[in-house]
Image (cartoon, rainbow, N blue to C red; front, side):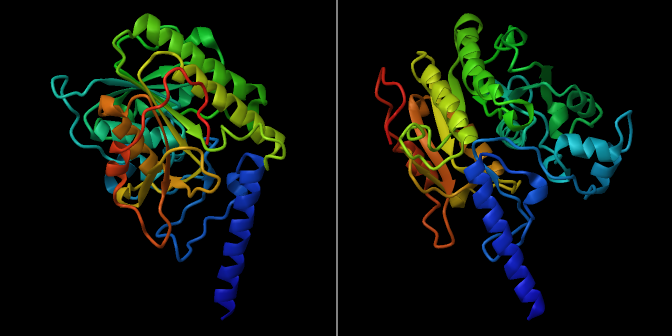
Length: 350
């Protein structure tokens, strides 16, 4: 009885902290206990969707192969696990595809964040060649020490900084598709990073795509619910979150009116579950007031799907997961029924 009460109290605390984190615009991993509840099948710390927050401390290796691959080089095993996001996301990938089998080269912007790592793995598993942008030099050094069956070694890494426009020059050369899933990290580096990452960087990449990637077939942008509503009087959000939504809305407008083939994927918040559960995915359009979260793995599945066919271009969607009462399982059919955005229109209304 005492144990049950303790678990219940911990679950209540986690829920309260989650609500606080969403209202305040960020989640501090150390303040979000990882709780196994009746509705979750694994230990998951939920993060708000408008940021790509740093993960919690990394676990021990869980396989002999992983322990071997992380045991050498100048970067120690624990440090390598920390940099690469933990053992769950340093998984062995299928045999690398040959150039003849490749579906094209995808530039992943924000490739070392929790969502970016999941997107990279999803793309690799579907036969794409992946080029990743990161400003984390240590990550690139760590990835170079992994054997070829580990996903980070299959990505062509480039060290660039989204906050420095000139560092992005040349990033789009030889690229067929783009996935933008970067987080500003503004809660650590200053609120002006929201503008630089969610607004200016999108604009710079749009310009470079027109200049250096004239055959670009898809630009998929990760955005947030609330971008059509943040300016309404009394919108329930902190000053920080309002700034995030303002510049995410700006990024949407820049892409939607650019003339490039695009898809915009909005979501509310994410969990760290690394295993895809496609039957739980739900796809709608608009900007709903209430929306469930979605795992990083399922975000990777949806964003990869958006790249797969031109019929998903010029569309804005909201991705989430169904609750315990079900209702999912038809997400690909929901994708096929998405309505095209209105030509020439800026930010879409709810």
